[in-house]
Length: 391
Image 1 (cartoon, one colour):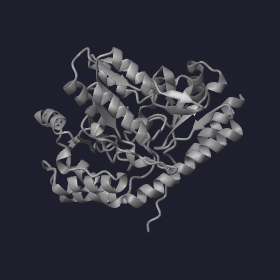
Image 2 (cartoon, rainbow, N blue to C red):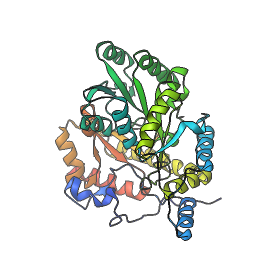
Image 3 (cartoon, rainbow, N blue to C red):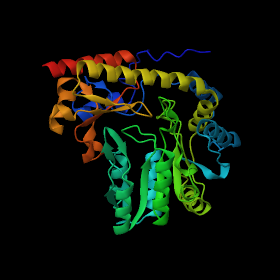
Image 4 (cartoon, rainbow, N blue to C red):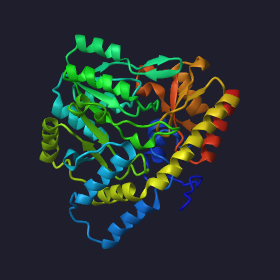
């Protein structure tokens, strides 16, 4: 068995990575430890690079086809990983999940229509509809004893008063890292089905459930979820290959599927590239051991972060995620304004984290930290934060 080295320090500066090479643009400095953009600093598995080399060695880069083994690989992965049996005809390539959300907004709603999001949540859920002249309806999560849950009663009240067309679901949730329970998803499906509100479920972090938690695909929980949803998945976050656009949609309902797939086909938006297909097949065929080792390393990184904060900076608390490599830091006990909080991390500690408020006003007092990196990077970052707090 190969033992993968996640402690390896890889210099990404100058590689064209947003995470490192866009620091000046976004933070006004280049000397920050980058812990913001949601990709990892780990070397992608050799099974993926070998598949890409094989494509390069062939030397002819013509139009690729969506082969039978591409669909079969996805079906087997989802069945084995998430206990959800899907059909080949339900699957179609999309050129990125944010783009897929935009396609749904454009195809299933009209300018002025209302779309529901559940903040604090991944910011493109708000940006994409707004930039396409749709109205955003906020149904914020509820916090109880440090735990977050959907406000399903609030959603019912909204739908009793507002004519909404679509709800964008983050499953697992970003930035908090929640793996929603089956009971929650069933109730959500019931509410939206009765009001004819289509659910678009972003499940890009689905393969990264940790600490014994389980991801449940939304469309698998009930007949109403099955018949009133579009699911987006990808191997990109899982296997750290976001630069290889490799997302896909799963649409079980025939009417919705025909509508959506015709839209994709009309603009050839369902045509991927040679490397996306090769990388997806390699990841899902040979990636299980790499994923197992990576998730264990991420769990240890999260526990290290939480323990360090408890022992050295107790006014900042790490909310332990149930999925993914993103940690939601609760900084509210500092009593800082959001501007001062952001300045603490960037100007004083030299860290590039995501401002919690970018995920909605409900993120005020929080910061999002990416721990998908070598342990030494995290230790250095936390030491800098501790020093900043002391001074």
